[in-house]
Each structure stands twice: as structure tokens, then as C-alpha cells.
Length: 414
Image 1 (tube, one colour):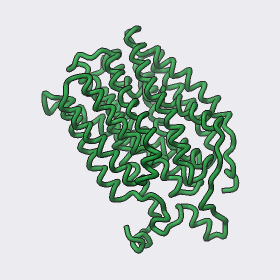
Image 2: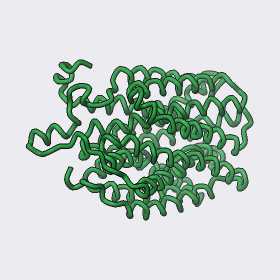
Image 3: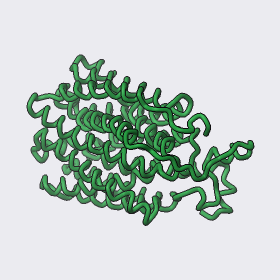
Image 4: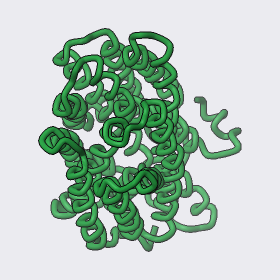
């Protein structure tokens, strides 16, 4: 967009970055990953998959995600966040459409690995670029609105997939094709709207312009050195989120259908409620992190997640399952938004991409291990209760890890 047009907007162009980023997250994480929970029951029934095989499909996506992370930083330096995001969404969308046309488990796993590669190469640039577009006081809020795209995708998938399943005897195949096509369309939107830096449009980061007008200093080149122990500390917190959150998201619909006797339509409706609640999780806790501290907000979120996993793991009556789903949804996407803001706080805008990539790699190892181990445990015990209880123990430990986070350098200053 030409500079003259950016100056006529009634708001900072950074909020268009947020809107496009939210659509990108809707596609690369919400549709490409978390819609799988809605698709697995029908896929498992049609292809006669075991719990372990269903877990392997989920794990394949995160193996691809891991591989994508390793290449993302280098590709972003060469091509920029905008071009990389669009190309990555193209890869994810095409591979999702292709999954709808195959029946072999090996082929599905191979294609879903490619989907995961594309998800990583889109997600990291979208989240990391926010540190360049927003000052510290707005990073949590901006990231929160971006990750709310996940919740919108869950609402959409929870309503659309059961409806699509009723249109044809091919059930889950049509859903993959439709979802993949949506991802391809969003790739075009991201290419048109995203920009790598506000300086490309002659702008300052949102929030920084107001401070400059008030006579307060700002820093365009804030390069902070992040010690390895802090990277590992943040990575451990993000690992717990990946391990526990993804296990729950992958198997809660299957749990409702196979252990509580819900129909797929009813389970889909409840999964849509998860998406509805989660629409508020990113902005709510992102703004809480901006107003209080990243540390306090992480402690609150992990405490609520612990309750959600305990209620699911104890296999109580249905009202407790509803409460578990509500607790899970209300904090669903809060941690990615807080961690993206925290990366900017600790590393500064210029190095936030590298730090967020590093902790996302650790996070992705949790995504690989979580659903795979949950599937194995369910295969041996006949239920997912033990997996949910394990998740509760890990998130309780994450509360302590969050409490020990140090104050970011310059947090009080900028």
C-alpha cells in the first residue's frame, strides 16, 4: 500500500497487520491443525484407525512443524515475513486438499507433515513481526487479537465439518478439500496486506508514535542479549503448553464421542463453544499481560488449564466435562500471545524473531510428544483419562516456572 494511503487511514496500519495475521493464524493453525480434532472420529471410523494411528497422524503434523521451524529463520531473512507467510500457506492449503483424495495412512501422514511445515513457516513470521509493528505496551494486545483467529477457526470447523459430513458419503474428504481451499484464499490476502516492517511504509511502530509526540524517547534498534538459560526457561514453559494443550485439543472430541456417548454433531457443537470462548482468550490475557506482567498472566493461565485437565481426567459427570471445556476455551490461545510479547520484551524488536523461533522449536517438541504419548496411553488403558491427569501435573509445574521468570530488561522503562 502506498505511503500516502497509509496516512489517510483512521488507525495505524499495524492493526491491518493484526487483521491479516489473525486470518493467517485462522488458516495455518486453526484450520490446518486444530480442525483435525473434528475430522479424526470420521477418519478413524472410515479407515479403521487405532488410537495410536490417530495419534500418529497428529504427531506427523508436528514433525513437519519442527522441520519448518528449522528453516523459517533463514528463509525469513532471505525472503521476508510477508512472502514466506504467503508461500507457507500455499503449501499447507495444497497438502490439505490432497489429503482429501487419499486413503493410505502413509500418504496421509506424509501430506500432513507438509501441512505442518507450512504451518510453522506461516505462524512464526506472523507472530514475530508484531514486535516490529507494536511497542511493548501494545504487543500483548496485538498478539492476543492475532491468535484469536484460532478460536474463530474452531467455531467454524465445529459447525462446518458436521454439516459437510452430511452432504456426501465421502464425509471427512470433502471437509479436507474445503478447509484447504480456504487456506489457499487466505494466502492471497496475507500476500496483499502483510508488510515486513513499519519503516517499509514510512511509519513508526504503533504506540511509539504517541510516545514520541509526548516527548518520550523511543528505541528503533533495541538489541538485547538473551542468555541461554533464559531461552531454555521460556522454552520449558512453552513446551508444557505444546505437550498438554495439543493432546487435549486432539482427543477431546474423540473422548466425548467414544467415552461419553455424544453424537458427532453434539461433540462438534461443544467444540464450537471451545472456539467461542477462546475468541476472548488471546485479547483478554494479552491485555492482562500488558497491564500487569507476563509472569502473572502466565501463572493465571496455567492454573486454569490445570483445572480443565483435572476435570477431564477424573472422568466425572457431564457437567464437569462442560466446565473442563469452558476452562480450556477461556484460556486457549492466551499463552502464544503472551510468549510472543515476552520474546519482544526480552530480545527487543530486531531479535524477537530469533528468540521466538527458538522457543517455538522447543514448544513444537511438546506438540510432537503430547498427542503421540496420549494415543499410546489411551491404547493401553482404553481411555484418555490418564493423559489428561498427566497434563494437569505438567501445567501445575508450569505455574512455578512462570513465577520464576525474571523481569525483562527495560520493562519499566519502555
